[in-house]
Length: 326
Ligand code: PBG
Image 1: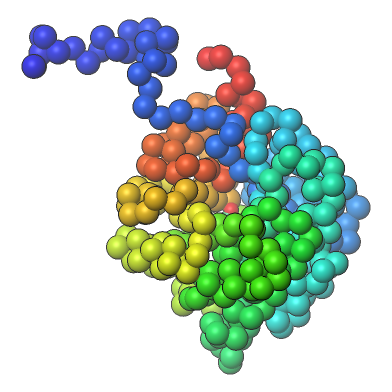
Image 2: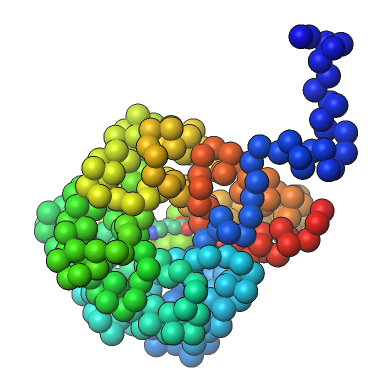
């Protein structure tokens, strides 16, 4: 049936009608809030390119996690900034490392909040790459054992979910085997499966102090032009035992989220990264965008593309905005 029998505007007439027929909903329960936990500091250090986000000492991270939980956000994603770094990134698997301390403290204070541990060596290596170096190249297979050790250490500290973000081949299988061997058979893996070598990580690298001292991450993170390969990455992680998969960044890769969501039945997460956050905050601060409307629209779009879970620095603001009726 065509116009005039069909009138698309009929279902857009009032807010209640629009709400009734809305296909994609956004709720605080879909969101994950990333937190940066810093060792050896007493007070939060604001991150200039991420207004509203700071590196937190453990006690402040515990308070922040409590606010996150109170807003109905089910999980935090933890990144650690250690006091000292070395070639191998040994701070990553130190049972008394910064992330392990934070996991224990947050678990103890907020037992119902899920704690997801980001698993990568780049915040812990003196050279800033995501694995151990062999000359100027990141040695894939030599890195796997260190990732496995880190995963077990994070699980031992009480992490609910392990999220490897390094993009080494084979790491999901190796991490699964290591967790199982130590009795952590029930700890799920959220694999950063399709992680692109992206300019939108810029502010994060300031936040986590993880800018590579030479070169870039293009020999291990994905080329931005590749969508088919993202599906291969996701399927290979599924085969290795991933429980959930991630696409990252989110907004410039909505098509990839859709393809990956169509290709697998696992829950799909998408990471609305630091650069995506910085763009909205900068435009809003200049008065060029309505922040609330832009954020809710962007997060809804990420869900519409196929993400079940949205990791975003806007999580607390979005959860607050979603509590109020429009
Ligand atoms: C670690 C890691 C990065 C991000 C998450 N985990 C940075 C990178 O790969 O350079 C980026 C997150 C963000 O930009 O918000 N490998």
